[in-house]
Length: 410
Ligand code: NSS
Image 1: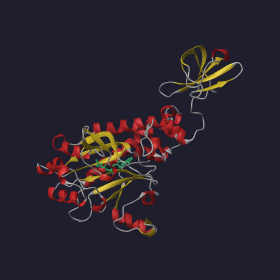
Image 2: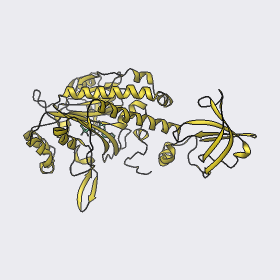
Image 3: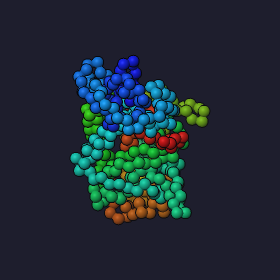
Image 4: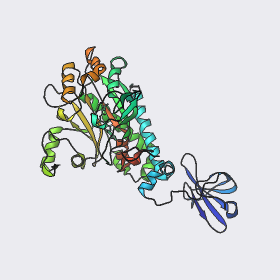
């Protein structure tokens, strides 16, 4: 990991293949050939030494065997530009920061799975090669497929909906793809998507699943990855206090709050006051959540802001039975979900209104032709959750090999 040479002794900071670090000390002549990132095997005497940088132990080295003598031009030094680290992510993974990030990420998916399995949700997987959009045509990646146009899946939702009628509550953890042309700190073109779907649920049931799942993940990750979160300078005390239930803010209340704060929308070079029907952007989400420590739900968005599958509230027309969970302190949306339109006439009308061809969705419409039931679910972006839990602004640093509009290598 590092080498510190003195006249008599050389300190070799060894990184093991699980990311642990220990210092060893050798007579300098035995280590004179060594370079940083060489792979070695050492034997020696493990000694307690309070001066040792990690863990209070040091290896008094005896023999050293070199497996691969690294070339001396290792591109990553102590201080590097973000771009260089991204270009060399295959090597930058070995930095202490990236190791901590990888461990937090592994714990997040582990505890998400654990909660779902313990609560009797069934794991499934859906195809990634698909024929239709779930979240709007503008972010579809097109693939050539034996002379036919197909797309990379934006969401497993439609397939999960097909499964719940015979498998009950299901979930999947698979990559989703969005051809996001904008460079932002919260958009990837490939992200890990946890999706959950269940029959016979109300919107409130779906919100409860989300807040319990997220609280469980946060509590357990905070425990298991206390050291890593501290290393990443995350305020862990703040996370320890995260607990369901989360506040529910009706959409119109959110607009009202923003209006009172004098929140404005920039539109075609003009600025105007925010009003009913406007979507919530990054800035408005930040404004709404800045005084919260828990995440909050914004509930009941105007239906025209939402995808074709969102069920309209029959008791309050124009409002969708859907909700987004916003992480506190401006981290913004981490989940989105709600009830699905289960009436074939309304669903077909919604497809047409959004310029989508109902014929492409024929198999999906079958789910309404043959024994539909009230149902719903949600999707959570693992990297969005990671940003908040690690307090890392740029989403590219929450995944080991990020994919964005300008990056597919390494
Ligand atoms: O587009 S979503 O808001 N909703 C869906 O895809 C639903 N079909 C999910 C469902 O109900 N099964 O995306 C869901 C979440 C969203 O809240 C973010 O957390 C994450 O997926 N998401 C992203 N993360 C990173 N990068 C991008 N581009 C991205 N888009 C969505």
